[in-house]
Image 1 (cartoon, rainbow, N blue to C red):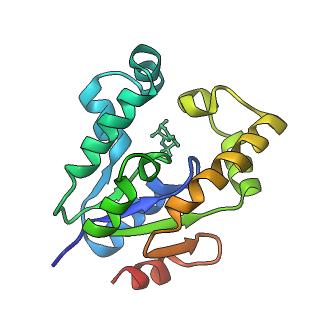
Image 2 (cartoon, rainbow, N blue to C red):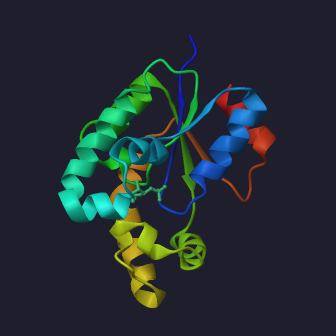
Length: 167
Ligand code: S3P
């Protein structure tokens, strides 16, 4: 039976980029969960957080996650997706989860180069405050991410090796 592959991991870990590469290598479609939600709500995620609050976003996110049941796709999830409701349990029961691991320092250097305002959870943090936030949040989220059936360190693992582990 074909099962969807869910890429999980912290914000800024490169889930979308890797997901597209895996999809191309395996000849399977690619889905970005955040993009699906944005297309549905007709506004950006920060706008939605401001207007409706985080919990409404989390409910919607969980609904969109569960719509992926039975798809043949490679799906990049949001950094918080596995950490709410029963989402991570659902992911491992209904698909294969791939955890894209990074150290807090690596995430910090990647996120420092991105627009932190596009991610409401980061609340415009930068510098040392951003690093402290990442360390705390990652520790809180690791128990969810680490339930994934496959974990990879992108820097040390080639695309071929990742694909091999997913077969
Ligand atoms: C979030 C991560 C974002 C997006 C939302 C919340 C989080 O996705 O779903 O801003 O709580 O970590 P990315 O991981 O693609 O940035």
